[in-house]
Amino acid sequence: MRYGMVIDLKRCFGCYGCQLSCKAEHATPPGVFFARVVKRESGTYPNVRKVFLPLLCMHCETPPCEAVCPTGATSKRPDGIVDIDREVCVGCRYCMQACPYEARYFHAKTRYYFGAQGPTEYEAVGYAKHPTGVVMKCNFCAHRLARGEEPSCVLTCPTHARTFGDLDDPQSAVSRLIKERGGEPLHPELGTGPSVYYLPA
Ligand code: SF4
Ligand code: SF4
Image 1: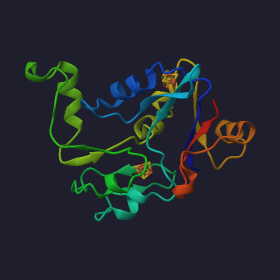
Image 2: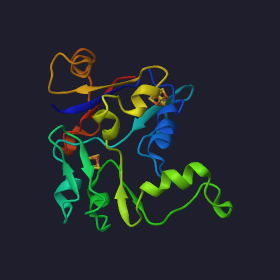
Image 3: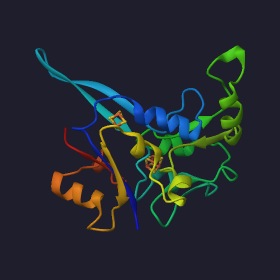
Image 4: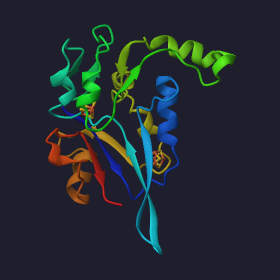
């Protein structure tokens, strides 16, 4: 079993639904985006078009973030998820330097979206689960997977641009999409072996 995700760039129209649902699912503080969508322009005038690139932790096969973690707080699970034990993280941020995909965030102090007004009721409850002084990132919604549910960003995408499943199973939807549509990870030349693949736009 190796969890992975396939993102169809042809289907993504940049609605930010995944980014928003991820924030709601994980109650991430201001400035933290486990799932984010980057917009870019491609081509030269007048043949220009917008391209949307959804990004998240790539759950690398050989994660450089794990290699540099001095405490073992970052580790790769047998199912392929790269996770952080927040009890063990000392906030040294070596992993942030090592991650080539900028997937990690340091939670320095608790901040609220409405500043001096203080936390909303949602923030008061949601942020309580995020200790400060540690690093945080996407974990493929491991808590949802444990309940037999898909990651939040997969479930809420209105165009079904995201598919989630077992990369080790050649018959899974993710494996078939990669094979049939020519899925590629981002920056394969880095040798990290990402578990997130992209189908061409
Ligand atoms: S929810 Fe789907 S369509 Fe919307 S930005 Fe995310 S991947 Fe793209
Ligand atoms: S994308 Fe970054 S944080 Fe995620 S497993 Fe790879 S190196 Fe680690």
